[in-house]
Length: 221
Image 1: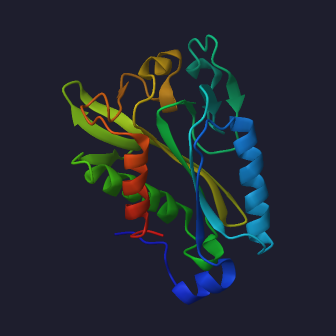
Image 2: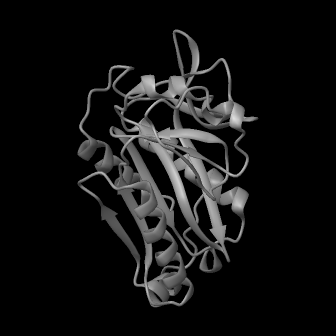
Image 3: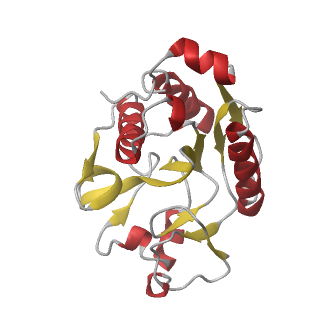
């Protein structure tokens, strides 16, 4: 199992542990970016602790650094915004749990591939708590499950690292409007469906998902 947790005493001395923040209302994407960038700056300056922020956005399509215009099929009334995270185009909206992760890899393991792999394992471990068997696929980003239509994507990962401090993070579909994915080629992957916990019969509240997400995080961070 991957673990970014290296030295407890060093982590506590530097940042007083990881701060968890859960937003109860929808957070505008632009506002979230500003808050993340400010926190990253403060982590660099050693004046704020690391943070994992759980939130939801109003409907929006975000384009990562490798996104292409042809991947926007029909945005309709949903705003489209370019972002500095890695990856292609994806959808964010109510019912999707987003975790923005601001960790200082300077005091952990300075390996971006390892970090991304750790995020993947965290998602997989959390879904396992709901008896969902999920997995990664080489050449296809994100978290996948098997169903009657083959393989469907249930989670996405898009990160950015500034001087070894991470931000952006993961998204897991608990119960978003899946029709919103029809307007894009999600993550640049054609001929694959997008699913959610509710669609596969796991009817849970966001707070219940958060409980497991926070619980499993202790194994990795």
